[in-house]
Length: 347
Figure (cartoon, rainbow, N blue to C red):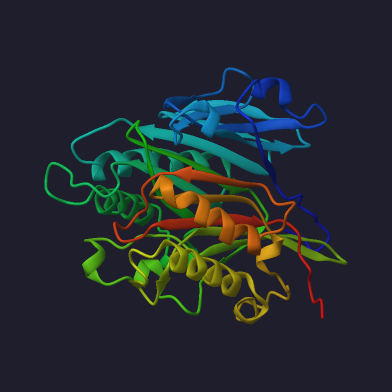
C-alpha cells in the first residue's frame, strides 16, 4: 500500500429484526446481514449479500440484525460451505459446523476452508472473528469442554496457514442457544492491521495448560487503519472481554464486579497508555465504544449489567444485550465493541 492510498473503513450498525429488508440502507451496498435471532441457519448469498442466522435469542423480539455496508459494488459466492461477500477491499464470510459429539475436526475443516477462501481471493489481513458455540461449557463425548474442543480445532487450522500468535485477529468465543458452532469473519485486502494486547492480561495464546490442550488463539483487539499522505485514522475492534486479570477469573459469582472489571479492561486496552506501546496516538475512552454486544449468562443479571454499562457508554452508542453462556463457567458477562472514531493526539 502506497503512502498516498486511502482505504475506507468498514461500516456496521444494528437494526431491528422486524422487516429488516425494509430497513436496509438505500444509499449504500449491503455486504452482509448477521441475524442474532431465535434459530440457526447456514449462510446464504441469494439476495446479493451474505446472510446468516445465529441462534442467540430466545425470541425474535430479543434479537437484532447486524448490518455491514459498503460504498463499493459487492460480489458474493460460496466455497467449501463458506458463504461470502466482498467489495474488493473487505471480505465478510461465514460458516456453520453442525451439532456433533466433538468439534475439533469439524472446526479445523471449516476454518481451513475459510482461510483457503481468504487466500484465494487475496484477503490476507484477517481483522475480526466471531464464534458462537452451543453448549460451550459442557463436555463433549470424550469428556473435554466443548469450548476447549473448539479451540483445539481453531489452533490447528491457524497453524496450517502459518498464523503466528502475534498475527491472530481479535475474536469473540461465546455461547449460543443452538445450531452447533457458527462463525463469521471480517478480512481486508490492503488496510493495515495491528493486533493489540492488554498489558494487564496475559495474551490468550499464552494461557497455561489448565485452560485446555490448545490455548485460545486471538488478540485482545485489532487496530484497522487507513493511511493517506496527510492523515492516519483507524478503528479498534475490541475482542470479547471479561473479568480476567493475568489469566485468572476474578469476582466469580459477583456480576456487578465482573462487569466493572470487564469495562476497566476495555478502557485500558483502548486507552492512550496501552496504545502507545503500538505507536498508536489515540486518546480513547469507553464513551468512544459503539456497536457493543454485552453477553450475560443469567437473564436476571441483565438489568444490573445494563445499569452499569449505561453509566460508562455514550448514550448514543448502539448496545445489544444477549442472554447466553460465556466461555468460562465462572464468568458471568462478556463485552465487545468497536471504537469507530479516533481522537488522535487529543490533549
